Image (cartoon, rainbow, N blue to C red; front, side, top):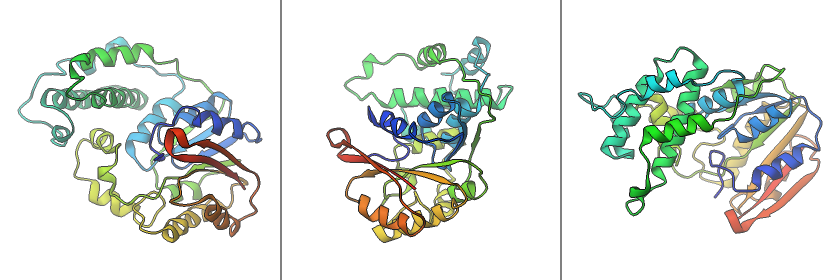
Length: 308
């Protein structure tokens, strides 16, 4: 099932961009940036992008890719991060890593995370965290049968750094923030709201596929109770019923009433139907065009974007 933090299936991002090209806007607010792929494309188009996410890992990624317009990690920065990356210390600074990775990998991520704090700018720290998350995804993509094909993590980090595209400069002051989505929208001025809806979640965030990223960026796992409590009753948190989910959606959109144009992206996977979603939107404003594309072979869902 597609979720707002998942990498988009092939063609899904292209569908979203093809729809947004039909709209006229100079600025866009994105309350759930996730991987920030769409945000970066819109920045390249020349829009002013306000990219937000309640998760710190997504904030770091948006800061590196969307807000940052000039800085890059140098060879000297990489050397600082990777120096003694595999050397064990007295104990792990972040014991939660041992639950996600093998022992040597846990030491690598622990030492690199400590090295991030030695970098001399916020953007460089965000760039390093972004690359570290990419290395983590690479590491977790192997299992016992394929582990022998894996390259050393420091080499992977360096290759990823070398392959990173040049930062996109922009004539607009793009921003990345780490706020609760409703609070973000209430204070944001933009021509367009782009909201890729999270699917209704019935499990806790600490069991989500991105949970290891959040623990690595934060440096531990003792924040989960507070994190889930802060998000309770909000869109994206644990939801038991469709009615509850739609109520959370209406509450979020109520804070975006001052934004003149909305584009709501939805995976119609039968948990919440497009018809139910449209009915909720009509209680807030007039619904415009509805765009759909079938991705059922890839995700078991149909992509829908509703403009209002």
